[in-house]
Image 1 (cartoon, rainbow, N blue to C red):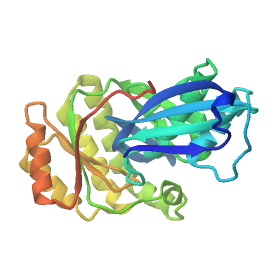
Image 2: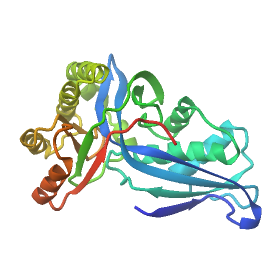
Image 3: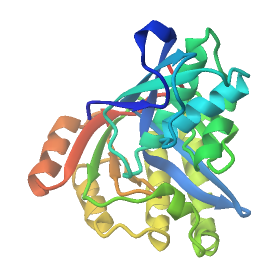
Length: 300
C-alpha cells in the first residue's frame, strides 16, 4: 500500500533525537470469534503480511490537533513510559488493506507502540502493548506469541494455544468495508453472540485440539464452524460459494473476518495453493485475492 506519514510534531532534522522501528503481522480474520459465558474472545490467525512502523522522536515542534490511531498509540506509549514531552513523526509501510478485517489498525497500533519504546531504548511486553491497543479500539491479539486465545475488548491474553500451523492461506475480499469500532458498539451484538455460543464453543474445542495434536483437518473444521456461525452476526453473501470452492479444491476449511469482509481458505499441505489462488481470481476477477501463510504472532 506504500508509505504514509502521520506527523504529530516537529520533523525538523535539527531537533531529531531518536528513531525506532517495529513490524507487526496482519491477520486473515480469526480462527474463532464470539463469546463464552458472555465474555468476548477470539483465537488469532496471524499471517505473513506485515505493517512496518518507524517512529522519530524530537523535543521540538507544535502539537497537532488531528490524530490518527497510530498517533494515539504513540502518545499513550510515551505516557506509559513517562516521556510525554517528546513529539513524534510516524512513517507507515503496510501491505494490509484497511477496514477489511485483516487487523491493519491493530498491526499499526502495536508496531507503533514498540517502535516508540525502541526509539528511547526500551522494549514493551506483548501484554502492555495489548492493553494500550485496547484503549484505542477493540484489537486483535496479533501481538501475542504463536496462536492465542484472547479478549479483544480488554486486550488481555487468556491462553497460549501453540505455534502457528505450517499452512498456506488463500484470502479473498469481495469488497466493502466494516468499521471495527461501530461493529463492536452494535446494540444487538451481545444477543447475536449469545445465539451462536453453542457453535462457538464447539469451534473453540476443535481448533484448540487441532493445534494441540497438529490435526489440521480438525482445526479447519473448527474454523469453518465459527465462520458459518458468524452469519447471524455479520452475514457474508458469498460464504456458501466460498465453502463450495473450498470443498472442490480439498481445502482443510474456511475462516472469515468476523468483523470484516475477507474470507480465507486453509490449504492442505499437499495442495498447490498458487493454483487455488489463480482459480479464485479467474472465477471472480473483481475480487482482491492474496496467497500467504499462517505465522506466529508477535511484534518484530
